[in-house]
Image 1 (cartoon, rainbow, N blue to C red):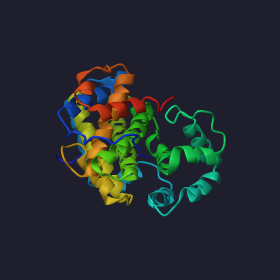
Image 2: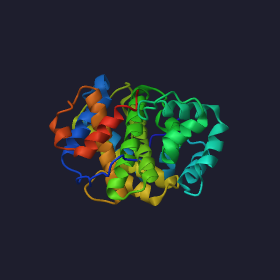
Image 3: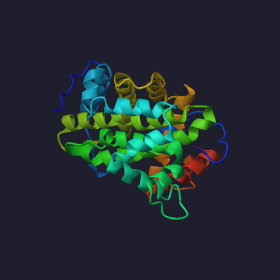
Image 4: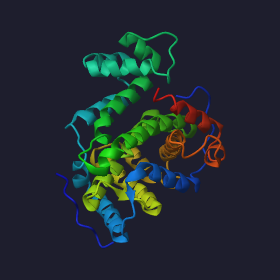
Length: 314
């Protein structure tokens, strides 16, 4: 049962160019992104309702233990897996041996290797061939995505249930895009992936809180509210990441990614987040491929990354 807090008073093929600083375009992208998330479930909520939801999200950010309880987590499994994945001394063979013990993971690796993203010349049929194709970084990213999937795709009812697959779609694309942008700013590939996957956990919690406040399976349609909710939920994600003993650099990057500057990891995450949102908005028909947000907001390398994301769903 969700307990509602009391409101407070108030791997690139070519060298990547350096990404630009976060710009005002991000507010426009977040506005369109929230409109897409809300969809037909958006309604004209009273200002008091919007304020209450935002206050509750901020309240949870002050109570990391309670916030972390609002998303499922298999005890010790995820931290152990993440430590193993981050350990450079753990070779591909050892990771492959762990994968081979789980038929679900074997199927995931084979599906990944045969996806349009990797474009194998002939179908990949064995685990060894699949791992050879996607490489150690590809395997690490895939296992992290499998571990995170139940955290994002949880649902009980209401709007959170509708939004969960949409948010997960963004999480996957953000993780890939952030990892591709990592080399441009000398950020760690895998930490960029983790930050991309973790960033949306707070948003899922925020939507669960909204369900408890609204009681109608809907969410406030106000775009101003939506942009603020995205910002506050990002801070909530950072709080939960720290509570779960994620690397400090990952939690800090999530907290910093909404503004200009920040660490190299925060820059990779901010760029990955922007590219992932644009990919979703283009696919939904809300932004065109030649829109200024794409042609002027992204450099050439970032646009190539945008194109690669279109293959993730094939």
